[in-house]
Length: 238
Image (tube, rainbow, N blue to C red; front, side):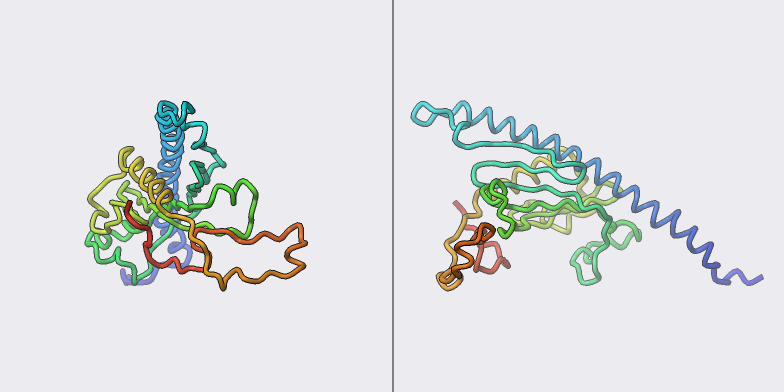
């Protein structure tokens, strides 16, 4: 009998389900575990910062009364932290992803050592203005400031603004632990604070209609880079 005979479609399905599909399920379980740890850290960091600000007085008033910090668990796949004028929304994407063939991750030797090494769960971080969320301004944009990729072995790397682990060469070398996760959160918060709201170009906002003005639903969109490109890191160092 020819040993090179192709597998039947049924056997191919069994092989795919027991291999690829099972592995993707394990990866998501790991990513969910990481996301639950991230939620715990968000609450811890918010409390720690609030206590630190409570010790600082401005004209006799604790800064914690002026600079509000608030953590909110928004369900299985989302959490947010509100601080000063900003909100960071952390989301665990509900799927497991592979990278396209043009992604720089393929230049890392670890990526090609085993076919499942590059299948990852993904956690994204979006920055919104606090007032946009508070007032339900649906037209206001949020900006992707970071995303974290975690694979089945616990190796990770980060894409993002001002993230020290934004090095694909680290993938396969550094395991994600509590310290790395805390650094990921705190650097995202630092970037959001540095990412100022810019006055939009005059030509972008010079006209509205009477209908817009009188509409109960009309809101002038407000975002940190309305009218500007968001292709580069244009935050100045303090």
